Amino acid sequence: MRPNFFSGGTLDRASTLRRDEGRLATLLRESASRLFPVWRSHSLVKDDAVVGLPHDELTHLLEEGETPIFLGLQNGDACFACDISHHELETIPRLTKAGDFADIRQIGGQLSQADGALLAFARAMVHWHRMHRFCGVCGKPTLPAEGGHVRRCTNPDCKHDIYPRTDPAVIMLVSAGDHCLLGRQAIWTPGMFSTLAGFVEPGETPEEAVAREVMEETGITVTGVRYHSSQPWPFPGSLMIGFYAEAKKATPRIDTHELEAADWFSRDEIRNFAGKGMSLPRPISIARRLIEDWLAEG
Ligand SMILES: [Zn+2]
Image 1 (tube, rainbow, N blue to C red):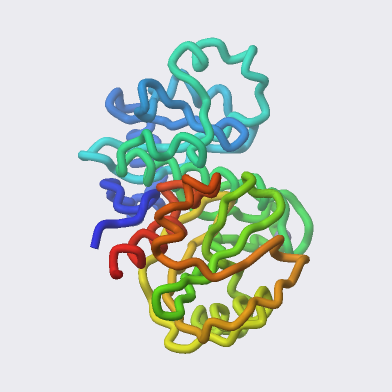
Image 2 (cartoon, rainbow, N blue to C red):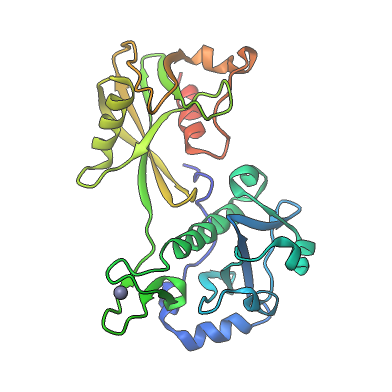
């Protein structure tokens, strides 16, 4: 099965190096090492490829106390991510000459699978650092440790360690014979329909979350929940866990807090979406993958 976009990268995360401060400092300064800047959730790209820079072009742009985040080794060369969000683009002309800062959610499909996976990792890590600058136990500032894979409380009486988090979310294609259930949120592009989705709550399995979300959003009972595939979704820090489920073709009772519309569509209707001014989600999304794989089954 082909990997979903934002996964299937070629990076060796080399996690044992994260605690080797001396080795990481040496790697950072090696000429073949590359640093990938993230500016306000945008990544540096040129000609549909990721742009990595040597450390002396980037490390001086980090905020005080912050360090480059060690992502791993690619073909033996070290890769780091750097958050430079506190700068205005006009003040970093060397970087803006090297490429354009682009949102990988918008341009993902133009990147290679490996670049997509690398930048998804970098973006998610940078976001996690930004959101954990203070200790949840004592409220004092935190600083990065272990190659950026820990944030440690600076209060010597606390020293609480925080680890990167991923939020599990379920996304599911519910079918009834030759029809499937798709919905849309009011904020989406007009005419776009997609699979239902929602976050896994504490104290439930992903399969239970599938049944609960479909019931809450449409009033429909599902059976036969089965795993399809998953996808890192760094917007900002989710893991999308994809499922197929079955249901009887009952009229949806929409929760208008979540959805603007939901309906059953046949395979032929979905294949003819474009002719009706309707659309499916982006090709890089697992939602699109779930729909296309289901279309191919019938
Ligand atoms: Zn603390």
